Length: 352
Image (cartoon, rainbow, N blue to C red; front, side, top):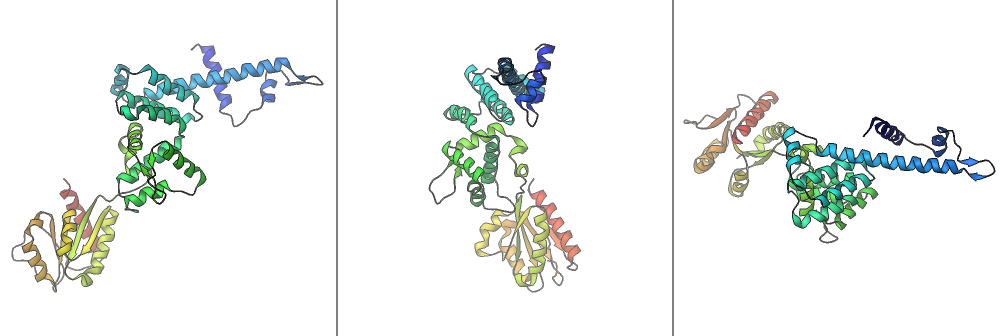
């Protein structure tokens, strides 16, 4: 592109970014009027506007094509080299490039560039490829972000929601007119599956494919949509729950700040499955229930590697103390917080 052509593009683009223009103002810049008094349209003015319109279109096309390739070649040098060396289908290239030029949303140019990269990396299965390429033109930019959010909701249990089915329903059923239109379009295009009218639409394999083609790494983590997840679970076990309820409740409060979920129950019978799913089994030994707690630990030695014994005021330490232990000299907010920090450290160790 020559300097003059570059200046013309820049001038037209600058005009295009203005909040609003008028034919009259644009013609005035060239010393022309749209209407000749008493004679109707001015021929020279019409010619000038036709030229002006063509320039806008050409400049916009040139800008979109340039933007497409800039986004295509963004990234680390090795990634750029991989794109340069990889073969591609001319038909796919032309289709996505024409989408980038014709789309009403400038923000979607990046989407088309990422889809092209996904094609080169063979991330789009043959069964879905043509449908994804063609349907991408029928989606708006926010639809892709909505699909990402739905996918993340179907993959992780959020700290403040928890039930994945409910999480998906919260995002696939809406009374908001514009969001509802987007959801209906996603169902129509096969990105969401509506089994029946009573069930909320669910994400399909096509949705999962396009989301992983466009987003990667941290973009697919709950934090990317402002959500936190439970990183694990600790079983807080006591044979005297009534006496320990305050301690267990405050311990839970502090552990939740570390995104660690807790279960508070007597460690017996039906609790076995829950204990098995927990990273740590914490057994509270107080004066009234210590004998029962020690008997449980003896009978369930298989839990030894995940057990933390907690001695409360009034209890006596076992003659032979093995494994992890924590002793409360007195129970107050400071000691409970220190205990929760200790459990957090033990939890992290158990995860490695």
